[in-house]
Length: 108
Length: 507
Image (cartoon, rainbow over all chains, first blue to last red; front, side, top):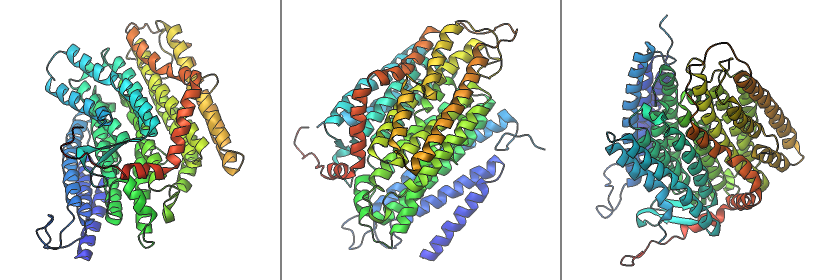
């Protein structure tokens, strides 16, 4: 499971970074989204990967670390809000600069 | 129980939320509320500074025992940063209340949230909580940067937001890795765990530590991560740019905190992890900032590059790492935050006096009203920022050079700092002569001088001679701060020995 998980993270991150380096705002936003997915999964994995372990004390002999799950929740909320903000800003930039280039250059 | 440490975060939070609810009520009411909430930060910070001088205060939020809960730690450094931020914010809000806040409905609410993020980042003793406060101050700054709209702001804003979101992702990866290895997010506890780390885990923790350096470097605009800063700061409205003068210092504060506490001298295998990297980066930052200042086409752009130069100077002091160097750096930090804030406000005043056609562009413009008064203030600010006597910039730089000693590091620091200052001198003289002495025949279509705006700039500027006049008490405090930073064991012990308030006992 660790290998599969690591490969998933790697693919998500590299796709995210590749898209972030594009010149149009939409791929950049998509890249940021992919990157934040990868980061959230990574944070989750920092509590160690295991199945069938509740995140509550006393329910079972073994329990999962609840803290990374709380961290992921926080990170998801912030990431979601920021994606929405970037999208609005990108739309605004397209309206204002009449171009969806990240530097606001015209289309040639 | 002493509840003062949480007030610098709570006051702007509640006032900001209230201001959001009052979005449609009269500007006078919103202004006075915001002004009051900002000004009260100054006495609050002063009280906290005097308390922190007597002993570090640890505030366990929600009565959770460290390291399980989040703690706020008011040591000398945190209290000092609160004081610097409070004074800067007061000057800025007075300036903004003269009309700049009217460009958008929610300026004051966002301003308070920005303040909350800044004070929270200084106070927190928890790595993930630091991330959260970073996000709060960044989200507020995204909105403040766009305050007043305009295409230049949207373009700079897009870069700024995307870069900082990427930085946040890196911060999360670093914090997650450190948690995965040490099993804690409390910085004091983490320092203990890092010191006794399994050698097999040390490289991974070291990688996370260096990732943190990239994140903080991005916030504090060090080479090669400063390219966003000049565009963003030059595009912002004057009060926003002046407030942003503290933002780079939040990054520097985090560098100082993390690399003295977690990866400090007592961190075992990872001791002094970053100092070998920080040193060359600092020198390059000074050089490139000075070149940028020389090439800037507008006064705002020039001041933005001056901020880059000051970041390099501060970083050099942090890299030297001795008690004298840290004292000098902290002194220079107070000076540079207030003077750059004052310069941004002055640039705002000047561009209003020159009218929208000329603004703060460094080209000959119409004859200004009250040119003598404004140019005198500009001259004082320039002298101070260049580092010429008798103002605080000189004292800060002189102390930093003295702290470098006589070795190889001194041989590198002297030319970087002195040639950098010379280049800044040339840039500032050119800007001053162009703005005040060269005129074209264009008739002025400008606003009259607003006295209160000038008072706001003066309030920040007066800190520069003030720092020289009261150099002795200030330096005594800063020296104790540097000593405290270099002895993290006391900090760790104070955080870890906190016991929660027993139930039933009235605090």
